[in-house]
Image (tube, rainbow, N blue to C red):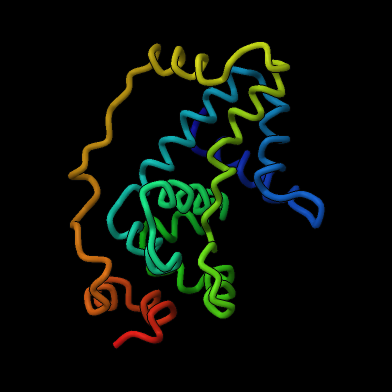
Length: 189
C-alpha cells in the first residue's frame, strides 16, 4: 500500500464520521472491507507515518496540548495527528506549532481539557478490522509479526528525533513553539 492509498483510507473514514459514529469506528469499518493482506499493508503504512512524528518538537507540542505527555500518551497523540487527515498531519510534521490553529486544540484550551488530539483507539483499528475480517480465527499480532518478518525493516534511530530540550522550561517552549505556548501557557511567566 502506498502512502496515497493510506491517506485515502483515512479520508474515507473521516467522511463517514457522524453523530453516531466516531472516527476510530469508521476507520475499523473502512478497513474491514479490505483483505487481510490489505489490513497488514495499512498497518505497515500507519506505523511509518506514526513513527515519522516521533520527534522532540512534536512531543513538545503534545506536552503543551496535554499539559504533560508520557511516552504512552505520545503514542496516542501521534495517532490523533493521523486521525486529523493528511493536510493537518503534514502541517504538524512541517511545523508542530501550527497545531495552535487547529479548532480542536483551541476549543480544548478554552475549556481546560487536556485530551485534544490524543486518540488511543486509532492505534488499534487494524487489529480490530483484522479480527472482524477473520471472524477471530486468526490472531492479528501473529499475522503482523509474520508480515514484518517477511519485509525489510529498519529501526528508527533516536538521532532522528531532532534536538532534545526541557519541556518544563516555559521560556524554551515559548522560543520553540511560540503560538502553542501562547495558547497553552497563559498562566506561566
